[in-house]
Length: 331
Length: 123
Image 1: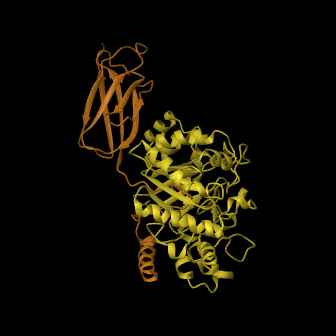
Image 2: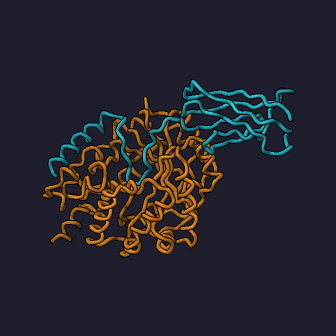
Image 3: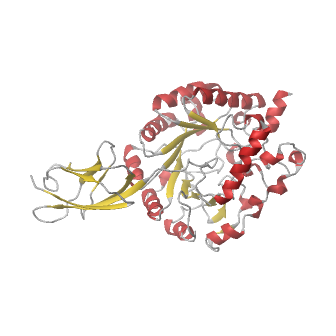
């Protein structure tokens, strides 16, 4: 393991239409006390040199002790970073987080003003995230990127978003599609059509050739002939292989957006690292995903059932198959 | 194309179990952080009295990163590693905690943790 998510809060100051965690202002879970997380972290024997803890949520900036959390992690020789909506990312907070050793940061921007504020379900959010992006991009210390969830409303704005980011000094941009989980489930306007998925991948391919910005498609799914055109490395879902997580209730799993039925243990009753070493069988042997349309797919060896967040209890087949969408369009 | 993909996948798959240095990005996470940094800590006191001075601004020259000393005159922050780093000490709160002359100091021979004791002269 060299990548650990910590779902440090499920409180959130926005109410995004596509939230995979279904977070809210008044989360039923209290924030996990730092000491509880550190006790789990301290079970890790000989962490890798580049081991990183990524604070996610909810919105991590709502934690008043965020800087202390980061500093305690860095004092243990581990790296740390944060995924944020940027709404509360002020100049003062930026400096305090850098001082606490933050080395990686991801901020979400989901379109130009109207489409961003619509998806984030909060008027004025675009203006605030624009300031946050400018601050983060100004820091040579941060390994910083912007992520965009591409949907039917912002699909036609990709070129303008690119220009906006370049003007702000952003060097890296990652594009996602939205998976029908959490609050996104059932909202058709959030999901790209087959032709739009292809169009987005063509856009990424084209921009990568022009070398304007380090743009890539996220590692959310296998995209057949677009592999290596839209990313630096081919698709490989690392959940449970290099990536672990401690979730808000102490659950031990991999990426936070993976179905909670995959939980392997709980830090409040298990030794975290022992679970990491001895559990995680369904993450490390994916042969169980060879079912439904995956059963006779000729690309299965390269895909292994797509990203694990696409597998949910009660479904015997993958939720989203990017490859199938692209094939459908071609036919 | 398929051959090229399989070749790359083979290497990456092998590395994922054996190498902690391999760089990747979780799909909903941040990039990894590979930059060298180090911890600068220290204490700022008055040259004449030896007492700690609070609210002295401690900054990294040509960078913009800064922190203020606390009531014990102490400070501490992580910053990107660089050769011959210049640390600047400035009294920025007017006369609130006394008035002190600014001072710069060069940090060299940096390890992953540096401690700096600085005494400032009263104006």
